[in-house]
Image (cartoon, rainbow, N blue to C red):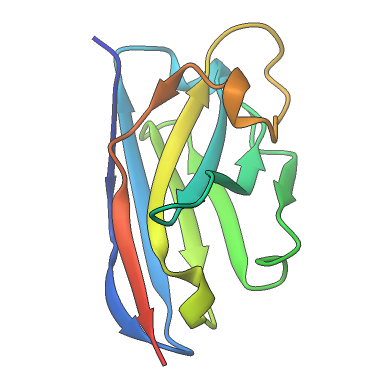
Length: 126
């Protein structure tokens, strides 16, 4: 059974850092394109960052570019999101997602991801 389990969220102050992790099982992680998305209550799911299966290509939303870094360790079946210089507007539930079919290139469209984690809450106070 496919599973994605996020961890690392929490309550921090503006300017702080957090590192999110997403451990996956039940599918071949090394061939899956992966992404991080976030959602605030009452808002649509928002793209944050994406990475190709090999990790050689990454993409970021303009709102997090220069502050967040997506990475992966295919030997550990783990996806990461390093978040620095956090802002109150980064507050949301962050979810990792996997796209296990078709191309292994990165993808910004959440509707093309077929497996999702439950999410981890990130709250940034001002």
